[in-house]
Structure formats: structure tokens, C-alpha cells
Image 1: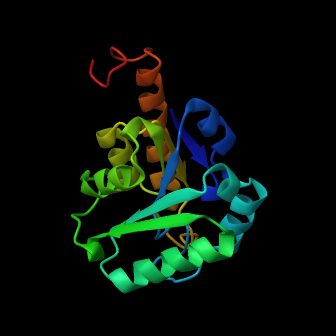
Image 2: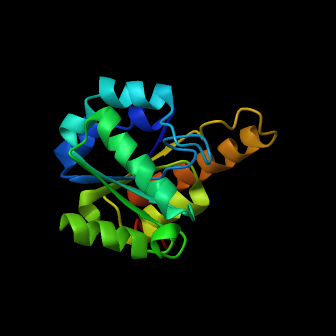
Length: 185
């Protein structure tokens, strides 16, 4: 089931833990920080801490299409230290992986943490990349949040409406109300 949340800190982490999720895979740019910034968004940071995410999921990953490895590594280290995660494992285009939604980044995370895809949740801000990655890997859960720093984007309202329609159809398919429940009709 895909859930729409205001920011990455508001995903249903307790529900995911009960469902058997072991690792959360976060998008970086637009999800945890404004694009190309090396600072966790303060609202995201406070809601992650408030919802005890580092306690529930002490090991998380960041998967991003960012091309500068050192930027991604520095962000992961800072994210780990500021929020108190046990481990933040970064994978990116800068680490030599193809762009999302291709599966190699997710496979690397699953192999690193020795979990199956169904034991992973994806939190991101884009349907074409993050949602499709969750679908292609068979993730156990997915939260789609509003993009950080996009308030000035003129087409935001239309993109959000389109994404919400995709989420509704995907969720109806999952519970068997549309198509045959396995993504085909």
C-alpha cells in the first residue's frame, strides 16, 4: 500500500515495523533535503526524531541519482550523526549505480543488510523514480512525500493531483478492487 505523507518523517513507521519491514530506503534530494543541499530539512528531521525512527529502524539506506559520491557520503554521515542512526548506507549514481528506478541500488541495499525486498520500505518524493523503484523491487511498503523546496514550482498542484490518482489506482489494484490485484487487468 502506498501512502501519501507531508514529509519523510510522517511515514507510518510503527505500522511498517509490525508488518515486518526491517530497512527503510530513503531518496535524498527532495525527500530528506532540498535538491543539492547538504542539510537535512529541519521539519523532516524533527518529525523523524519525534516518531522515534532511529530507534525503530536503526539501520537505513539512502538511494539517490546524485552524481557526486562525496556529497552523498557526507550527507549520509551527517544524517546518521544528527539523528542517531546506527548505520546509514549510501548508494548513488556517484557510487557507480544506474539511475532509479532500476533495481541495482535497491539490490545493493538488500544485500548489504541481508534482507529481502519485501522487508524494505521506500520513502521518496517522485512517482517516476521512487514509486516505480518500490514497485519494481516488490518493496513491502512505500510512502510518497511532498518534495522539499518545491513550493515555488508552478506545476506542483497538477503533479500532486496526478500522483494522487496513481496512488489511488495502485492501492485499489493491491486490494483487488481494480484489475486482478497483481498489477494487471
